[in-house]
Image 1 (cartoon, rainbow, N blue to C red):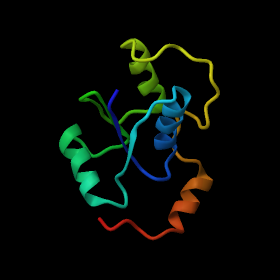
Image 2 (cartoon, rainbow, N blue to C red; image 1 turned 180 degrees about the vertical axis):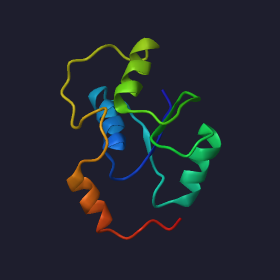
Image 3 (cartoon, one colour; image 1 turned 120 degrees about the vertical axis):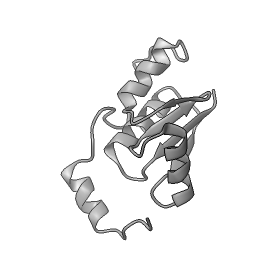
Image 4 (cartoon, rainbow, N blue to C red; image 1 turned 90 degrees about the horizontal axis):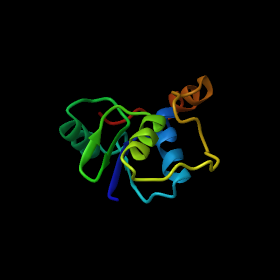
Length: 111
């Protein structure tokens, strides 16, 4: 599979997508949309909208999607087999208050 994930470096939703990729040991391109404007613009152009995460799997764009929804897509299309493997993060949750505080202390993105 060719997987491109348009993600924020620190985000509950983005970490949920990463957790699913780890659960199924899927190789994927983790594309930073916060620190690289061209990546963000590519995501918007390909997905038709500005919300993230967006995950492109073999040319199919899944826009504004959670890790749970990515997993459901993978299973429904027989791209992976069900797994009971442990995951590293919640797959359907935004950032916690602590994560928002940490992000607020960092420099603002350039766009």
